[in-house]
Length: 454
Image (tube, rainbow, N blue to C red; front, side, top):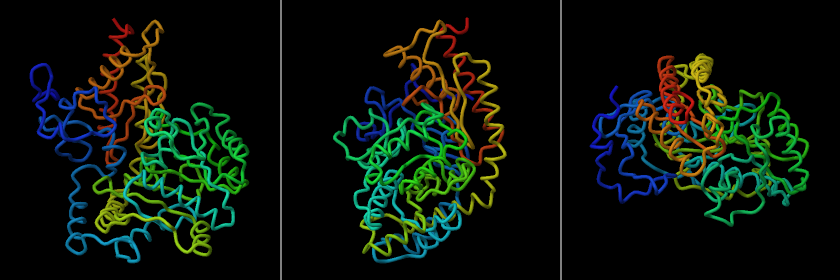
């Protein structure tokens, strides 16, 4: 496949009108935005850009398009709902689709998680978690509980509350001062043996009567698919119960099949007090997010508070809810959770087999359809790469070669540099093997330039 087809002289693209009028998300100003691919269509696990180049979408948009691109069933569900009721809010009114979706989620969520609150994004979902936790404790007669504990390097969103939960100083710096009462502890990669104990220490330091919630992803995304050690989640559950702290699973990425389960946390045998979700609930075809809460949280608020003092114009949007319901139907009908479980071992073995031939690879880790390859930021002689050199090789050579090979995935370096993969749940063995092959080619080129190969 000639993925450079359609590029102008010197590999430059012809910018489309509007490139000067749009500010991109998390994209450095130093990049030439006119050279970035413009994605115009998609089908299954593949997308095509404006120049006609076709790529494997190895990141499912952004951990999002669970059922793949081009699903006419989702377009039809949206169209039917728009003709019936295009919009009405969930403020003092109800409509059938959000009611149906709430009932469906109560069936799918683990344990006694049974009541949903809908918003429009993952950041809003985490913002909702913070407000729910604080108001719950006030309603429960413990008004001093307001602090939230999360992990270092973890990303939880961009709104000010969600950003305060986030454990990435570089993301927070431009917006300081943020909210007060947020503590960050080592993640399971930084301290595998002591990560759960660090949460207990933070609660005790709190002191306990000031701590409202612990917010953790089932598998932490930032840092590169950090799978927790055995027993970690059970230990954290026990700690939270002992100190009266709410345990929150932030499943914005991990839910709706990414780990082979509906909410991801099922892989670890623990039921949280709340779980956030977004992304995969609609496969990204329309914006939607939310929180599912336990009976304890719901009943305490209903008994002791006049209302949950929070709302969103588009939360539970009827068209988004209709698409979410059909998306869930597709995942069930096509047995996509089973597909993830069946191919998890193949994904792992293909990446590890590929990595065996690359001394620059430090680790391969992940779960379900959520994997990362960590690479060493150094030359063959062990000299660390930094500054412009690091940018040239790791954000230049690696990213360029992956794209030229026909793969969209993610090079991330919020901690150590990693290449991340998160394809649609409809991916088959051939797609997964091709992801490993393209990565192999990119790492081979990187190793040549860094002196690992002649």
